[in-house]
Length: 169
Image (cartoon, rainbow, N blue to C red; front, side, top):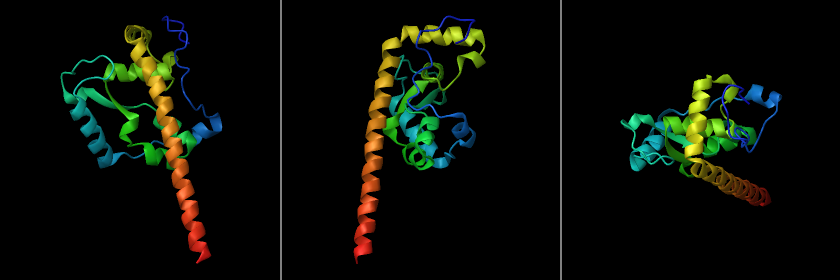
């Protein structure tokens, strides 16, 4: 917890999966490329307003496509899981940059102790102003993870079933 600015009591404790240090050393960010530009652009253009504050940013580039379940958390399930669900639009929300940073700090993706105290204070104020919406994102994250894990289990079962059919021939 940052000693310079008051933060909500549960700030930064919402990572669904907290990998150990050995795992963290293996993490690498996915190459997003043209597919990411297409998916995030479609989301941002379709929404035009931030999902938290409801404001329209001055430029479309100021609106981010934010992951509910972070790339790091998806990677901690498995790199294949991350690759499969990274561009899933069910896991994306259009957020202005300030709300995107606030959500990441609230979830624990960003560490408030490594940020300037003025930034932490601004994000904490932003969080308090829109707290019900940020808390709703936590519930949406859990629902998305449940759906994604169910989909991954089904596809694994489908692959296993098709392999057993192929072996019996």
